Length: 521
Image (cartoon, rainbow, N blue to C red):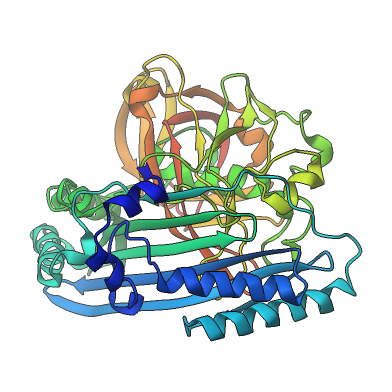
């Protein structure tokens, strides 16, 4: 939801505005922190400009984290922490400069503004190409995660009891020896103001419950684990309340036990049917990261590799057939990367990365747009802390469903022989995002259009371009699901970004299957 700053102020009481002078004790939804922070921002931007900045922005960020973990009948850990501070980013002499402090007071903001300019001027002496920002209309706005119940107002006892209830239910299944469950939530409040006139406040709430059940065969000394496939989401506590976490516990436990008894997969070429709970991670690694422009240009090479999707291939490279459409969307409801504006102050949007199998788009920031002769940024700038320099981060990247209603059962029915893979397992991908290996949580053999027995010890290997070229069936709109990760790493020093990926189930022809334990079916 979004409201204008003016509209909010007209409805705010004098008492509310007075309370905003003490932001360290405040975590209120949609309250513009004035007048104290307005004065800080004004002085910081003025100090940066006076010191020689041609552009400056101020980000005041408050991050709150809550984590619980349990095992069987006991609570293993409870942690709650927060950080609060201000960062100033500037351009001076055509170069970036940045400085930050946890002391959110005007004099400190002025100091770091001057420091950021000094850093920028030092950087400018080494710059070959000056930083140029794409033009954007200044925004004045408030954006919040739509929610009914603030998860940080729910008693810890309620959260712990939910996790312990999951454990109790799973432990009822014979053969189960261990159950671990967890819950994490993040609330991110930030205020962005720029010398161009942008003034945007946002509050984003993300949460992720989950659990893992482990079954043990004491005689053989073997064990198998099964993770629940419940997706992390940008939402309120009502999302957790509506989730079948306890209801699914017995099924998850039974599948962990069944994996112990399952025959080992036979290596070779197999048709694969990937459930959305598995396919999302493959999309993340093979499509999401390769379409980051900085990675494609080699700026991420030292940490996590480059990309096969280089600019010379834009508009030319085929990634799948005409039914394959990938899009980036920082407005996806519930998406972990969803927000109103990025940290450049750009309004978030949706755009195509792969259109009818053709590579057509990148993820960009205001600085990067001009690198590929685009007029405007795609709005993907993000810094994970007040003390982190914002840079290009992945938006929600998704595979569009087929127009016809086709379920995973329909895809199975259309498959004479193959394997269904569900859940996230291990993964690995090379430094050009071309050759990869992924596993999963459960593997079901398909014969004659029906699921038959469970298998185990499976991983699939492929080349990104061959893999997507071999995708011949995808599910319809009702089969589309949103999954994702609360922590995607990038950069040096490393930063973390939460991101979602939506997709329907899909079938891939003749994918190489390896046996991870070298056992025969």
